[in-house]
Length: 254
Length: 332
Image 1 (cartoon, rainbow over the protein chains, first blue to last red):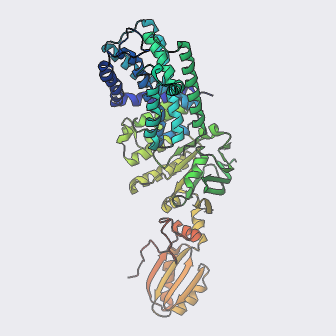
Image 2 (cartoon, rainbow over the protein chains, first blue to last red; image 1 turned 90 degrees about the vertical axis):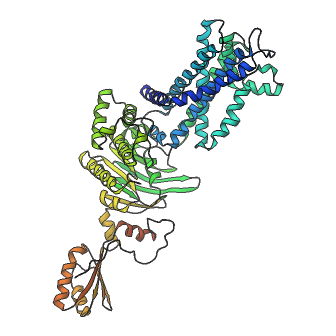
Image 3 (cartoon, helix red, strand yellow; image 1 turned 180 degrees about the vertical axis):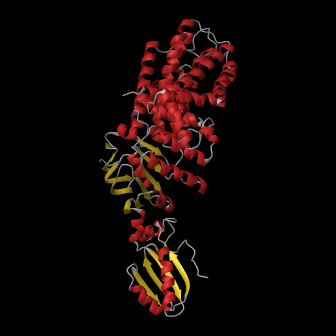
């Protein structure tokens, strides 16, 4: 049973908090922009096998950088349940007479909105760096991929939030889960260049399909057929949000 | 009439630590019921189970007629709760926190505005409602939380240590709100506290909780009577034996000891009996040098039942009679 009001209220809260914390937006834009400016421009003349012809390194990594921004911001957004737990507000949410699923969906809705806003700003900034989209119509498909990536990793954040209980494990998650997911995803290089064993790990990384799908939408370059990317990223999103909701329902809050 | 709360053999075990052990009790509708005990007694755990935030390990409980395990949404709809630790979003304003709550409980915009106006007035926060909560003082936060707990007009309100860490004046205010709420709105209130005065002043019945069990449950006065009533101690210069004999014949003297000029008796309403004793002493020619009245507090009750003091629940190994918090009254 889903309460649309509850989803709306939780979304509204996220929006208000976001709009009041401008520094959070600036902070979230810094790293992606630095990657484009320092890594992208610095290595722009580099060519890696599998990168596609006539694509500079900067253009190649723009979809990857957007994927990175989505990965980090989404996971942190899911993990922010831990902050609510720390500050006590989670209890207020948990005693409300609404289904736990509505609470999870409200969080996802709020998270997706914030994260998408950041990602779209990064895409616009990339145009300033000279990034070009061969087929503007496929921008729509890119947005679909972006939303799905964001949902999947908010779900992952929620899973970890339920498992962790407090902020202690935060840097552990960052270093041992998020960074590996990012580096394995092919955001910065074509995964065909990886040794077989590591490439296998890359195939298990949902972000691999997200970035590949984004790269197809934005540059018409891809490793896999885009429908396969779409399939896997939808599957990941459903699985992670489902698992997150299940664990959230099960955990005790007090 | 159905009870507001019914608890049967409720038990909660955390990693082999028994936090709540087979407690049973009922709370009538409209009652102001207190759970008194030291930190770690299991009060908050009990409240959290009743508020559906924790699942009991065994036993059952009903709130407003709904089972806390199988009818969680109905229970949530019937209750309001003010947690021990603040549960506000400090990045939102006071009004936004209330809005959030009212929307979660399904109130329309017009209803919301009316309800929020009413509860803000109740806790005197009308003029501070549009400040961010991070700017609020501790007392304001507490009042905002009480206001929030009342927005959806709950039939049962849980207050977990409602005045913890507040100054004496704010505490008074909050006590008054609580009393008024209970009397005017007929809200059933269950509060936990480790302040004796709070339980004594507010609660119609008090359950004294220690190490997960109820050691006593009754009206505060009855609890105090259980340990024998007021103690009047007198220091007498001469004719002490004659006074003792006279006093022993009086019906209101429950017990009496006398030795070497020190007389001690137990009775009820000790302060009203003192003039009578003085008069009697004068008639018998005995000179009273000092009078000392000790009225038992819930502290004494706690000590009586657990052998420990509630205030320093770890370090206390105090033996012997409880010392009084009242200063002796001396005849001039």
